[in-house]
Structure formats: structure tokens, C-alpha cells
Image 1 (cartoon, one colour):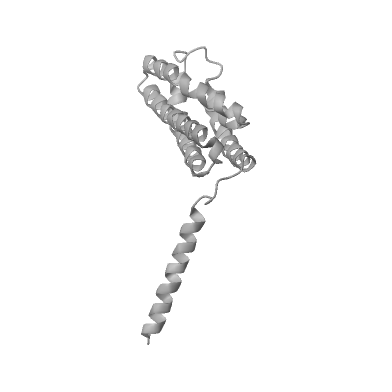
Image 2: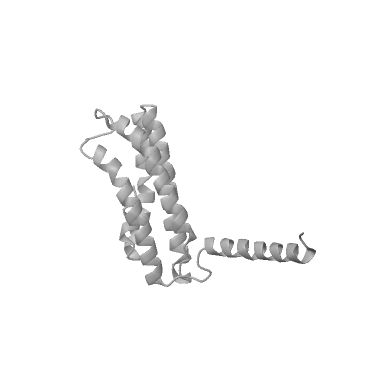
Length: 164
């Protein structure tokens, strides 16, 4: 027979267990050093870049989006690549940069998020066989790519600057 005391003990242990799980899922409660941030971000971005290379290999020999098979390759690969990129952006956004890098870190993560969304849009345009819209999207996203590369270069985050 369960007593009131054993129920209270079980509830207490459940609350403690859930609290531990919740805290384990949270990022660092203190800002990372520049070295820690660079190390963690580089690992995330290197993993994402490796996954993204598949799409690059499939379309790198084409001179334009209108070349044979390019839109089909993008339509097939872009949704998966966008998913990888959004996962990487989610991981990067959980890192807490030192206060001296906070503003630029937020810009970098924001640009990478926008580029991941553009990858998903690119896949949709490719499925629709709309090379014109795809070309316009790529031209529009140049600014985000350049900003991401500039910030990443300034802060020795080279793998994060190779987005899209």
C-alpha cells in the first residue's frame, strides 16, 4: 500500500529528475570564451558544410541553373540541405558568445538562418522549374552570404563563413 509519504517522495524525485533533464538540455549559463565559441561553432559548421557538399558536387559543373539536370538535382537535394542548415543554425543560436561578440554573433546566426530559408525556397523554385525565381533568390541572398563570410573571417570562424 502506497503511503502519502512515499507518494510525496516519488513526486519530489520526479521533479528533481525533470529539472536535471531540463538543465542538461540548456546551453551554457555563462558566456563562452572566444576560443570555446570558435571551437564549438567550427565543429557545427564543418559538419553542416560536409553535408552541404553533396548539393555542390551535383550542380558545380553546370554553368547556370538552366543547364540540363540542375533544377532536378536542386529540387531533390535542397530540402535535405535546408534541414541540415536549420539544424546547424539552431545549434549555433544556443551558443552564448562573449559580450564583445554578441552583436556580430547575432548577425552571423541571423544571416545563416536566412540562407537556410533561402535554400528551402530554392528547392521549391527548382521543383516548380522556375529558374528565373531561383536566380533572383540567389542574387538576393548574396548580401547575407557576404556578411556571414565577413563576420566569420573577422572572428576566425572560417567554416561558418562558407555557408551556401
